[in-house]
Image (cartoon, one colour):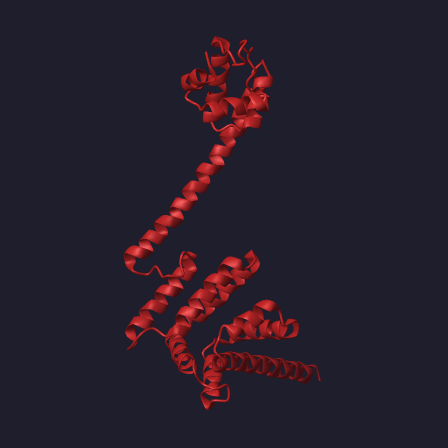
Length: 279
């Protein structure tokens, strides 16, 4: 047989046969006087065995190991490892399908946002935002969409412990009665500052409203984070504020300063009270 006939018999390409020769998976047959390879039945048997092994999902290196061991021991080990790998893939596919099914349910319910896919917790928060936003007149504030984007970014990029802390903060904040309604007041005010100067009097109003709409526990956490970020002046902090219009950035920075000042005052009062108790 010529190489094309052999390849057709095993349902592979001549290029594949040559590649198997190059890797040593298939022995080179004798050549005719004109230089063409002359394949026999044993070559066809060997090639179809290689194909059966690769069809199972074995890599070419694993196929080489199997072919090098005549006792079948290596094949048993390789098949066991392949089965375990397939089981892991199967579990991963089930998990992915479950996530996709949850997203499809969100789509059917009308709660899947452009920032998705996100975790179930964040999706629930987005759904609450959609509910409150739909109850307000006019289009949704751009600041609300920006916050969803930022939360999706943080959830994806944060380390597991930081992600859990973020989720805990969001749960605490969302549990406060009227929290989302107050948040939308802030969003609307931030939108109004999009074309304003940083010294616009509404900047202080927005800063105060933003600081006041956060529960005490969340405010304390954000104040501590702000103190660290102000000292570090990391690249992400700078990029975050550069994404705001100047007056909006001034309002957010003002809110963080207010939270930091309040946290320091609370610590001072707490320390003074403990000193008084000690006396």
